[in-house]
Length: 96
Image (cartoon, rainbow, N blue to C red; front, side, top):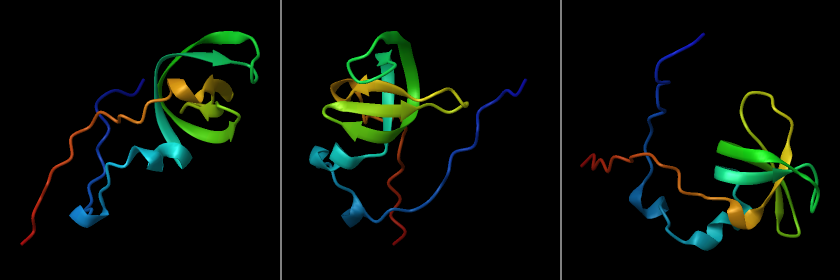
């Protein structure tokens, strides 16, 4: 069984490329699920509670089709339950 902390990706983003405009999340393809009810279909049956960072595969009338890492089948969640608060530190490095 693997263990340990996976390495983080390091890179550089120019300050002028960072935005705090939350309207940009309307088309985001990644989200965080924190105790979110999952459904087998839009307005379908609840199949459980999901947690973790997932990929948004499709959006439809206030719902999002999401997959989590690990090969589990896709499931639907209400878009209002999605979070885009990726809890990670970002270093502000001024190279000049």
